[in-house]
Amino acid sequence: MIASTFLFIPINIYSYFITGVIQGSIAIFFITLVFSEIARITGSSFSRQEVLLLYYAAAWGSSALPIYYNIIYRSFLVNSPLSKTYVIGDKPLIKYIPAWLAPPPESYTLRSLFQPVFVVPLLVWFIWSVILLALTISLSLLCANIYVERLDYPFPYVVVETSLATFIAERPKGYMKYFIPSFVVGIIFGTLAYLPFSFESRLIPIPYIDLTPITEELLPGAVIGVTTILSSYFGGLIVPFNHAILMLLSSIIVWVVLNSLFITRFSTLFPEWAKEYAKGMGLIAVYNRSYLRVWFAPQIGFMLASIIFLLIFKIRHVLTSVFREILFPSSVKRRVIAGLPSLRLVLFLWLLFAFVSAIFFHILVPEVNILIPLAYVFLVGFFVAILGTAVRGETGFSIIGLPGLTWATLMYFSPYQGYAGFVFQPPTIDGDGPPSFSQQVKAASITGIKPRDLLVIWIVGYFLSQLSGLIALDFFWRIAPIPSSAYPFTVYNSLNTAHLEAMIVSRQIDVSLSKIFLPSIILLFILSAGTFISKLSAISFPFLGLIAGLYLPPYSVISLFTGSLISKYIAPRFLGGFENWRKIIGYVTSGELSGEGLILMLSVTISLMRRSAWLWPW
Image (cartoon, rainbow, N blue to C red; front, side, top):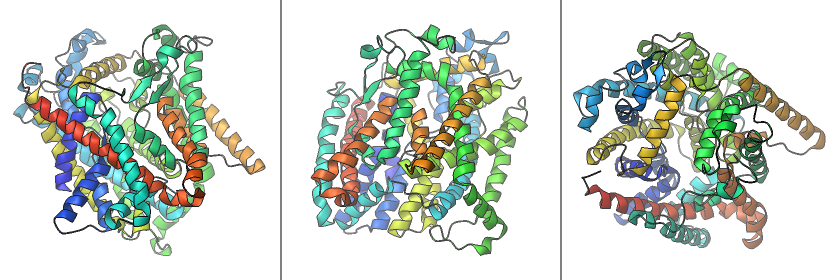
């Protein structure tokens, strides 16, 4: 676990600095395979349960940039002209940036986090991360109780994880003929797609093909592209087809049809979007600007409608039973989550750390009324956990986190003037925590792992990844400035983030309650109508797929839909029928992901070795 963390996370960070993509989802398959084979070569072997635990150990902390990157970014910001040109009231932005967020401007030249001036920011973010972990774990335990223990959601991606563990540990002969060819396919694709990047070249445009230059005449403002990462299509094999259809439909309506109509026919509804759009912007620019000018407020409304619908119509009776267990814990016997903390303890921990989170924030930003962070931590954290886990449990994929400007939107309705209150929010939840942990508990129930072991691995892996990430960030900063041409994506990302923050803190974003509650009412009506029609016609209404599509751009959904379509109608015809396909789908998917992950890690390692010797100049 320690070896995989300190090997994988630095490579993952470097990959993000170069390409802007965190490669955790496919690279952890390779990490698991490598360390399992090392154990086999040295004379020991892992059981299926041990392989799965190794897989989860590699997964925790691998899908996000360490929080200490915020310190490096803000060290850049206080030296950027933007911090002096944007004003809050009649003072430049730099006057509002506190020392606990960013040390004095001259500290940027030190290019090392292990300096006395960085002690306070490091301590602030460490405390922030501990509170976040406690809140996320408590809500994850609650969601596992609801969606695994009580509702028994399928969590489709579990079949991929358990198949990988079974293949590595047991080498079942009947499934080798499915895993190995898929593994080879992944290697071939990875060789064509990733290896050229190590030598400043490319054969396949990664991660997508931008189609906006072709479609902008007919559909200006539409977010249209095609994902070119093969694992995205293989991942779609496990998505239920009825969910995939509605995901694609809602994604196209939001990001293609409405995006374009708000420029052409209904430009008065979002005049900033219609004014700022220009042909030739490109896929990412169109997506970012339309999100900022159109969709960030409606997405908050979508979240409100989704959670109201879910709580009232879908899990109301389950919440009643949860409340009953809290009052009378001895009246309920657990099947799946035996050994995990009781709901009473879970509730106590959540309430305790929610208050700690709000108080911690208020100490750092006393100008903000403490009722605002209290409401945010209690409501938003719970909403994100419940909704995200439900979507993952049904579709295999989840809405990670929450609408990005939720906290900033809340601050817009307060009289606060400053910088820290907008960009630094109270620790609330790691949006991927509850869905991932619930999925792991589901897999544990299949393979015989004790759920308590999952909890231990999560906590240990979290702190190991934080330590590894801190050391790696310091190492890369010593090699070259961040941002710089040595790390191309950091240049784009730092400037883009700085512009966005400057616009937010100077209150240049149009926020109104109508843009939140009107979309919420519309979606609530659609969900209610769909459920009513479903009951009359006996046709299922996979509403969680519809909700997921509202947040996912089409280039992400098209690959999922394509994979799901193949899984539903094509693959069973050539691979022994539907029943056999259900048995082998996990081996097919995990094989490709492992092969692609192998070449990806090799490519990033080669690139890192080639660049690490070039210390100057950048």
